[in-house]
Length: 264
Length: 257
Image 1 (cartoon, chains in turn blue, purple):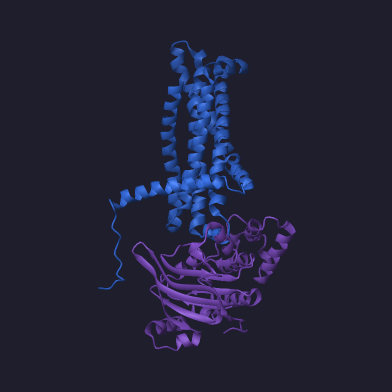
Image 2 (cartoon, each protein chain N blue to C red):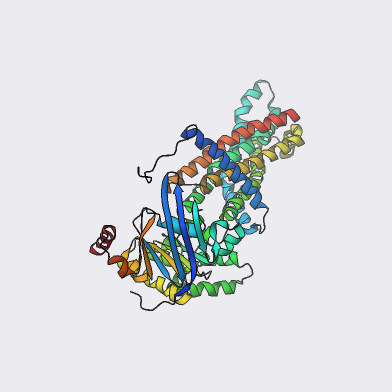
């Protein structure tokens, strides 16, 4: 018998299940490498700043519009229900709880998962399939540290800042609507708004923002860095970056809210 | 044929590969490869697509790990090196990719400066500019310094890819299909450039190709690869004076086409 005849490898359980566990294992290796490389010298400060500019500054226009409209529309939608009970004075308080506890981190994370996550996934995948990542490696440059660690750091730093900004513009959107309808002043709106917001709310939102930022960075870098199948792989990496990031963001939201509520 | 006689030191091996095997799953790509490259020598690995040629040089550059066998480059066993040692070795081994693999987001000048700045942190901007100019002039593309890779032709991208490798002054060059997808005149220019790099920078090279003109013009030694094994080696005349069907078929296809 010819020993050169190629036999397909038999999966241990099934091809799909084997692949799933292999992916989980690879993601853990990827995460471990991020933490190991992040603390190794030299720290890529310039590249992290450049990526923060890409992730943060270049998302500002979209975030401003989305945050403002979210605050404005949420106020408009809540008014009829509250006015039935003559409780429109509760609007600032209701909106601030909704925006600061849930909407600001969630809306920012979903918007950046779409805009930044797909961008990172596609960029790294395109670099992978055109051998630019290999070219870095053979030039004695550590592509993982230069491309992956810097982007994960940038999303982890920038997204909390964007969340704070979204919260602010969301509240401004809400103020605009309340001011036009109830003639509430700027100071009394914010005094009323922050009456029911506690320190734990800021901490929870901060933790969410950091976790969401890290998730978007890791997922999109993983998909892009490990892309295969040529140009088809680029599209797949961009798509999976967004879909998996969003899915994980919702899971993390539920998990963090449960923990925060048990502490509160 | 070459217009100069290369200085080959037959007593000094820069690459020494013995009994190399590599598989991807059930696909056995390399099946017992033995090859020596001497100092100053250009070795051409010739074979059809999918015979494992590119895998061979990726193993030499440490991009892929062998399944078994020894891969000795500049006196070091590549698969036994730690990350720091591998980085040191890679500074001496230049790899020219099939499509250039230039960084899309950087200009030609930045593409060349990038590996130099990363590997020599104390270098000044003036020194970087000077070295970039020198290598761009060596590949005849000094005017493209501010252009983006997307503005270059296929041949120019390959030349810039070679320049980016040369800027680190490697001892060994690995060329992956340097003439693939180019017109015959540009192919000859690239072949001349490969010879010029050998003469001027005293490099030893492995050139992966399926182009016989490239093999004839650049190779001091030619090895023919089939299904992961070397089936014939020698200089161009020795290899192609054979009656072997595979080699005759290869020769006829290249030169009759």
